[in-house]
Image 1 (tube, rainbow over the protein chains, first blue to last red):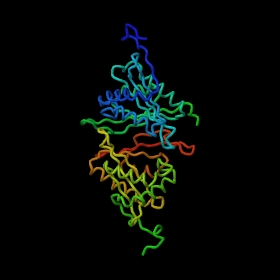
Image 2 (cartoon, chains in turn orange, purple; image 1 turned 30 degrees about the vertical axis):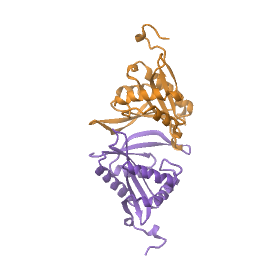
Image 3 (cartoon, one colour; image 1 turned 180 degrees about the vertical axis):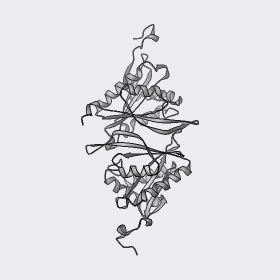
Image 4 (tube, rainbow over the protein chains, first blue to last red; image 1 turned 135 degrees about the vertical axis):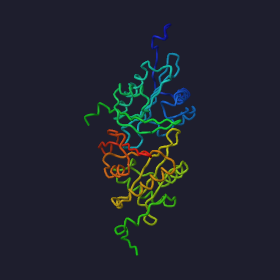
Length: 180
Length: 177
């Protein structure tokens, strides 16, 4: 339910599993964030067909994609959990996320991360890992806040338009498995 | 005159380091499968089929893969390849994978293979080489450190094999230090 003073309230927002028709929204969000060139590896977004093809790959069948929708049912952010496909890596999932610029700084990132982690632990995942540009301080602080720890830094791993950046690696282990 | 005992009596210098030849891929696949069968060192527990390996190599060659083989005559006893990343912003980096048949380890072949590969990478314009290795694989880590790789990331419990956890190291080598 939206309020007359919407800019002071977070408003209604839902996070749910991506469905086949969501590939258009997903492609649009990826394109916006990609073109900022500061947050994800892509520089332009995939087409909706490419998103659908990726979702339909055999290696994507255990992936979880969660999309946040605002109270106008517009997609405003996402998080994906990608379990490993090789047997020795199936206990590990890679995580990626993004939020449209107008919806940052409102706590949506924390909500997306918590929903994603719950979904991963429910799947039996024992370790969630992510890679983030060292320059992306805001994201690194978010990941630290929800419990990710720094595991290392890939030096000079990105080189774009004459600028170098490192890639920070962070991970969290399933607290329920720590006695193994 | 070589006899059937060539495997036991061959000198390390009989092993040549060459740019990978497609006609030796079947022998390379057999070498690769034998290292996979040891279960300890590589990501696969089952080897991809020869057809898959041939197709993969063809595609990677078109994308600028740098690949070397260690050969004893026409038999591949080790391999090393670097696959450059494709996405703009990462194409200065290549991912390295290598292996040596168990009978041919501890003879300096790994050092020769990786040295040739690294030189070729810098000559081709790459600025960084990355690799992943299991923490328990101490001989490999020693080799990589010897040629200048540094451990950059330690992924805690990154591998789960037969009920045992192992860490996974990401190591990186930068051109010019």
